[in-house]
Image (cartoon, rainbow, N blue to C red; front, side, top):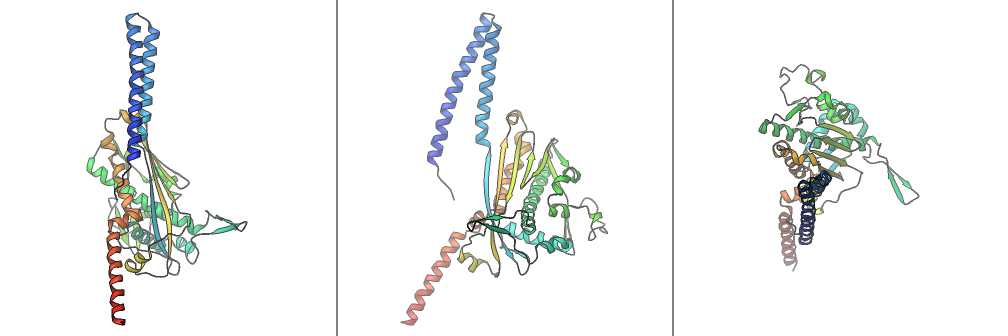
Length: 354
């Protein structure tokens, strides 16, 4: 849905005009200092002028970079059937399909994951002073859900980076091996399990497919090759619920948040679109925080080497945001038609009774 933000646009234009006027005045002052210093052979004036110009350019860069930074909040939902110990699929809602598939594959190969969540509540909390409640963030089922959502996002990141590398073939984009990210692997059991080399896994060790295999499936188990292509001298860190990708030009933070809150799903949507029963609806958030560095303004290949960021953000919002999913399937029009059909059916029933 297109939104109109006239006042925000007006304020942004006003700020830009003010900044332009101020920068022009100070640049003129700096230039006058330099000209005066040269004409009168006064080095102090020249240095002051150069200092003023450099300071103004730096302030201008910092001020304008904030308009390029992005902070995106994604709101997703998932359905969990405690009786079946399964994450139910919402048709065409891609992250729900992947959560279902990855969880089944992980439980097939790693029975500890299944044992730690089966028959248990996803959320554990304690009531404090009969008013507020405290969520136990160390509750194992809750950690498993968080890691599962995080893995889905990382898997899409690896896919986006691989596709980008195949299209561009830039020399500035390099491959990072799995061994470089052991701290990240140790904090996500799904990432660690699915990217473990084939030779170390029972269901794949006899495979003759070789090391060039990107993905494989055998006896209910999944293999996903760890493929990370990033600009040179990049790093990936895991801090609490955040995965931080540090590059020379920008920092990208992907944070997942599952606090056990139930989600609200339109009853008509559940009745008409979902054929499942006996499940609980849960809500989760994903925040994407992109911050550009000043040095990025000097990077002539910025667009070529960092276009994957926009591609990933666009894909991940359609992949995991439930409201965007509803827009993609044109739910508002579907809902209107369903309501019309219901009302017409009621009118017909009333006529039959009369």
